[in-house]
Structure formats: C-alpha cells, structure tokens
Length: 252
Image 1 (tube, rainbow, N blue to C red):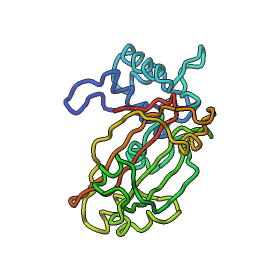
Image 2: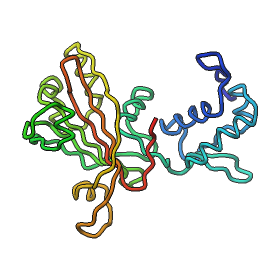
Image 3: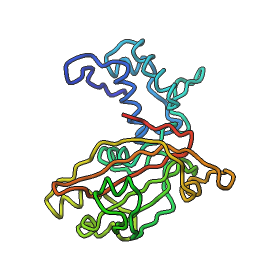
Image 4: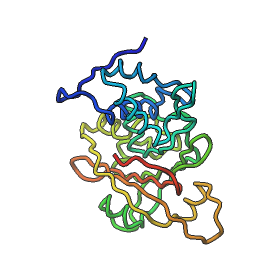
C-alpha cells in the first residue's frame, strides 16, 4: 500500500513537479531507494501526492535527465544502477543528520590519512585567519562510488579545535560531525559558512588519489568546493572537496 504524503507545502500550495522530483531525489541519494528498486507507478505517485499524472510525469522526466532513474518498456521506472551526482562533505552531513548513514548506496571511502602540517595554501590560511607556516591538523580521504574514485575530501582544523575534539588528531575515522562534539564540550554553537566553488589545476597527489590515468606532468582541471566552520570566537575548520573530471555535483 502506498503511503500518502501531504499534497501541500508550507504555504498551502499544491506540490509541483520539481518538489516531487526533489522528494524522490533525496530518497535515492539517502539510500532509502536503492539501485534497481522500482519507483511508484505514475498512478501510485499521483495518489501519493494528490496531483495529476502530468505532474508526476514531469517529475520523473527530471529524475531521468539527471540519471537517477530509468524507464523500460513493461518494467516501469526503476532507480538507476549508479547515482550520477556526487555530493560534497557538507551534503553528507545533511544526509547523516536525516538518516544516520554516512554513505549512500555503493559509496565508501579509502586512503584515510591524518597529519599535523604547516599550512601554506593561500585559501586555507585566509579562511582560517592564520599565517603561512602555522600548524594545523589535516584529514584526507578519497570517496568512491562502486569502487571508482569520485572525489578527495580534505578537512583542515585549527589547534584550538583539536584541543576540544582530540579525536580529530587520531587516525580512526570520525563517527560523528566534529561540530556536534565541539558544541557538547564547549557549549559554543558551530555555524557553517557559505559554500563556494572554483576550478583549478589538480596536484599530483590529487591526480593519484582520483586514479586519473594521464601522462606525467599533464595539467588536469578539477572543480573544488569549500566551506569554513566557525564559532563565536572565529574559524574552526576548513573543508575542501576536489572532484574527478566529469563528475556532476549538485549546487543547491
């Protein structure tokens, strides 16, 4: 039996096709709908949301264009074998808070490293308001989808952050968002800044981590997103995601 969802949004308006597409998109990226699972039929989805068939068809067409679902004659619409959209570390936080799951279907991470280093990267120093050469803790891992490297996650923490969340300096993977632990221990709220994006050339370490088969010394352009976390006293951490060429990344 199909569970009926409220057909109206916060302002009392009927749900539109974009909102219905967003509902199923979230279920797919959260792992509530897995690759190969059958999507509700047009009729079932129409009943579920209290909308007409045309609205559902338009919603499904969006999901098809994004590579999230596929239709086959006589078999209806199913979730695609592999998500075509790769999410950032911030998006993983949102998913973790909704579902308790860090990874989506077919997703994992490898190459975890934790190190104390002197920071010289201009973007990192500016975001954390430190001088070149100041010491930070850096955590690095490569995210994979079905065994294929899709992005490199880099998180940089100030010593004052690590003093409160000592787990950040340990080699084990973090089981929780550092901000939750920090707030529990200090009483200070952690806020997330504006996520931004830019393109640059990948370093050789990033090329190796993404398993890109390119000639030595060949320049490779990558998309990078970053965000800084703060408390009332200033910056706490800087997160950066470096995406393999050709990957699709949601921007909202």
